[in-house]
Length: 199
Image 1 (cartoon, rainbow, N blue to C red):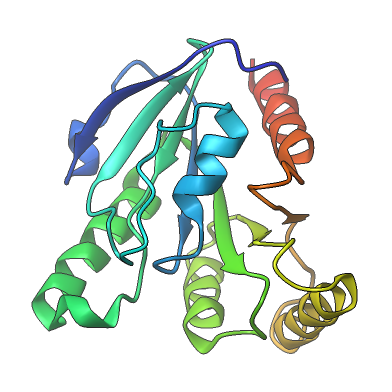
Image 2: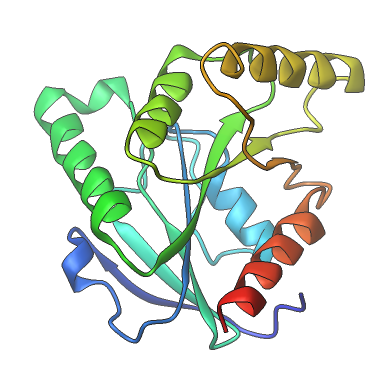
């Protein structure tokens, strides 16, 4: 897929205020500081499209970006940022869950996990919740260039083994590096195939 245009459209705190034009939405979510904004900028080749920050938990809104005037890339808040406080975490949880469960335009969900770490309880629990609610998703390993190839493969293998303890089959899996552009073509081709199948 060739990205010809990518523009920010709207931010909000309620899925009911999201665009109503019926275009398919591809949502990206992950733990705070997983590299989500960097991945979005890499996919769109627009350096400042999604604001990156060294401070975790920067995205507090549902952000819609219109791609090629055909589909939306949706940047969802990160889950599980401990320093937000109980009330703040609960507000974000409701915002995220409402969007994922109620937003009919959401066509695919990409769950981002940091490839430098072994399987994290918070990520596994989030994916379990998706499974319990019959929400299909893809798994995206970020920061694939931040450790040796052997360590990367080992972490991914551990993740798969951990998931297969409770899952009958694994979701589609992508490995990415925002700096080296790894995984860009695979994710965009995957989105393009889905777009073609629903048109």
